[in-house]
Amino acid sequence: MANNGFQYSLNGYKTVDTEGIKLFVLAAEKLNISAAGRELGMPPAVASARLAKLENAVGADLLRRSTRKVALSTEGAEFLPFAREILAQENAALAAMGFGNEHVAGTLRLTASSTFAQQYVLPLMPEFLELYPGINLDLRLSDMELDLIQGSFDLALRDSVLPDSNLKARKLADDRRLLCASPEYLAKWGTPKHPGDLCSHQLIAFKSQATINLIGPDGEQGKFNPRAPGNRLIIDDGLSYKIATMAGAGIAMHALWSVHRELSEGTLVQVLGDFRMDAEPALWLVYPKSNVLTAKVRVFIDFLLERIGNRPPWLEGEAVTPSEAD
Image (cartoon, rainbow, N blue to C red; front, top):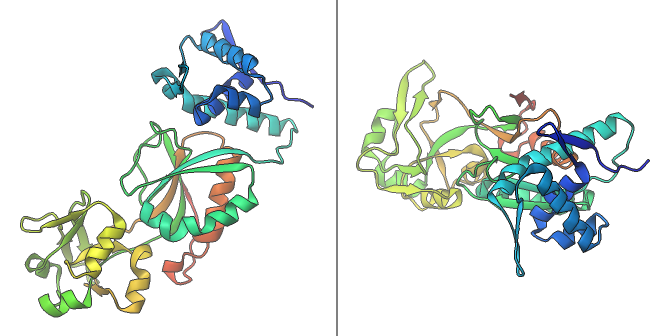
């Protein structure tokens, strides 16, 4: 049975078909209307007319055309995440009516910490791309958090759940934070025995890191405040943050996933090991809130859960049960 697209009513009197929406999404990803049309089997003239019909239905120019290039308009950027959601709903409806989707395809946009991705995600990409030849990956890797909705991302990998009602999250793996320093630093400055001793040490801050509450084995409390007056080093890149710690620039709080190898090799040493954060973090896969996950997002999440979440190498075989948070 052929799928010629569903009809959706807009403003109570206009309708758009999902083939036009699919064309718009592809054109927005490729920034090329003709190329998007070819992928859907439309001649250039038909693709242009189909897109114009969609724009007439929504009452706005979704793409800016010139003789040299195509770009998303402001209205197009606002409409794009909703267009993707409409297609996701259509896929779910077709599956419910017996239309099989044997070939998972499309471009998946992911934003993630560059440090984590370099260490754990990118080495897995050849395997994923071989398993799913119809999926293209658009990875935006940065230790600065990019806005999931405004950036039209399908998925984000974060080390905390965002308090955003428009997002959902699936836990990838547990993690821990710990204070560590290089052996050379500790030989020069000494090893702190209590959080109160940190005031006489050099501390390294990661981005806008706030004061972190610490709890000892008997409930004793302390603080790690890398932004205290007199502390002189703030770094916004995770790999550089680790390199500075290994070079002896000071004491820093790192994710266990980032430094577990260095700790086992002895190039970094944990300090104040009896104290822990009052709330341990986790790694989360975050996506726009929806009743339906697109197939490309679902298979990517499942792949990461199987390859990373089931056996996080930094937890040395500890059992981790993935969970969901709304």
